[in-house]
Length: 124
View 1 (cartoon, rainbow, N blue to C red):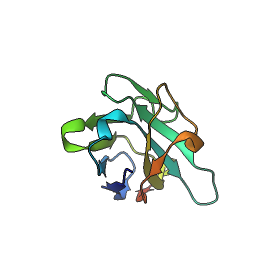
View 2 (tube, rainbow, N blue to C red):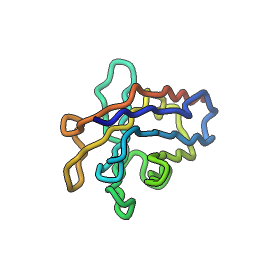
View 3 (cartoon, helix red, strand yellow):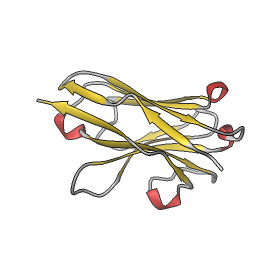
View 4 (cartoon, rainbow, N blue to C red):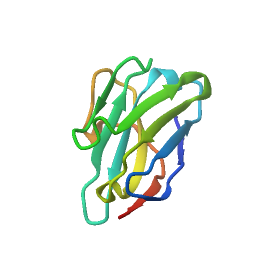
């Protein structure tokens, strides 16, 4: 069982930055690949970024590539999402998720555990 708690969301002006954190409980964190997803009101949850268990491999949605960076610190059971050059269309609830399989996974249905989400609002 893994419990995930996100933090770091807030209100920021366009062009600004935020860093989201997701802290996991349990000693098996390093065995999970991690993903970040987001969901805006009235829209489906969409993939944002993925990182493998070691942090050596990452994948991003085209919409955030070059602006967002996913990273992890297994010693702290934490995964991060650094978000730069934020745009109003980045406004959404952001969720971290853990997946016990291998390989790159962008579909939310594969993930085993989810956090409660943290809200990001970008004003124009």
